[in-house]
Amino acid sequence: MNVTAILLSAGVMVVLGVLFGVILTIADKKFKVEVDPRVEAVRACLGGANCGACGYAGCDAFADAVVAGKAPVNGCSPSGAKGAEAIAAIMGVSAEAEERKVARVICQGDCGVAKERYTSCATAAGLAGGPKMCRFACIGLGDCAQACAFGAIKIADGLAHIDEEKCVACGQCANICPRGVIALKPVNETVIVSCRNTDSGREARAACMKACIACGRCTKECPNDAIHVEGGVAKIDEAKCTRCGACAKVCPCKCIVDYLDSIE
Image 1 (cartoon, helix red, strand yellow):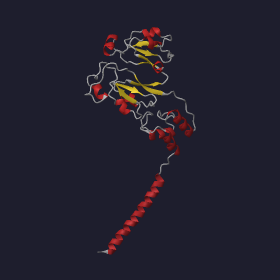
Image 2 (cartoon, helix red, strand yellow; image 1 turned 120 degrees about the vertical axis):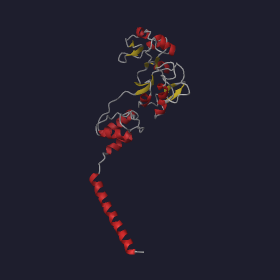
Image 3 (tube, helix red, strand yellow; image 1 turned 180 degrees about the vertical axis):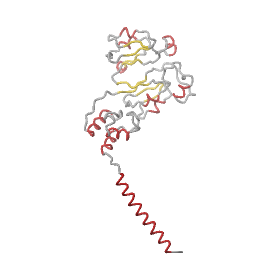
Image 4 (cartoon, rainbow, N blue to C red; image 1 turned 30 degrees about the vertical axis):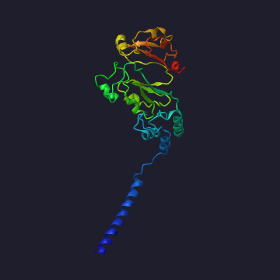
C-alpha cells in the first residue's frame, strides 16, 4: 500500500474542497439577489390557494407583482377585504373597496340528468352536445366542483349548487365549465335570469320547463325598464334594476330567480 500516494490524494481533495468553497462563497455574495422583505409579508396575507384568480401563476408570483407595482393590492379574491387592507398597509397605500362577487349557476337544471357513461362535463359536452335535452344547461358532472379549492360547489340532481358563504369568486369553476353556465356576479345582484337558452320559445320549453320562452311579460311588468328580451332570452340591465323582483313574480316559467325572496 502506497501511503504517500493516499495522503497526497487526500490533501489534493481537501485543497480542492476549500478552493471550491471559497469560490462558491464569493459567487453567492456577488450574484445574490436581494429579496424585498415586503414580498414575504404580502405572501402571508394571501389566501394560499394558488388558484390563479389574480391572473398570476400562484401566490408567490402575485406577491412579487404587488411589491413590483404590477398588481393591485386587492387583486387576491380569497384574501377578501381584510387581506387587501393588510396588503395595502404593507405597501403604504389605500385599498379601494371592491364589491364582493360570487359564482352563480345560470341554469336551474330542469331538463334531465346526465347519464352515467359520461365521466366529465368536458367529455359530455364534446359528445353530440351533451346528455341533456337543453344544449345550454349545466351538465352536472362536477368538473367545477373538482376545480373549486374551497369546497364551495356540490352536485345534486344533476346540477351544480354553490355555497356563497364559501365562494371566494376565484373564477376557476367558471373557467372550467364547458358550457359557460357559471358566471361571477356581484353579490348584490339578487335578481337573476337563470337561463341562457336562446332557442325559440317552443323549443326552449320542450327542453326545459324552466327555460325562458321570451314571452316579454317581465319587460311589461318592470317599473324601471330594466329587463328586455334580447336574442331570445331575457336580460337584465343592472344599472337600472332595483331588485324589486316584479319580473320574477310574473315569469310563467319561473326562470327568473329572486335570491332575496328565496331567503325570506
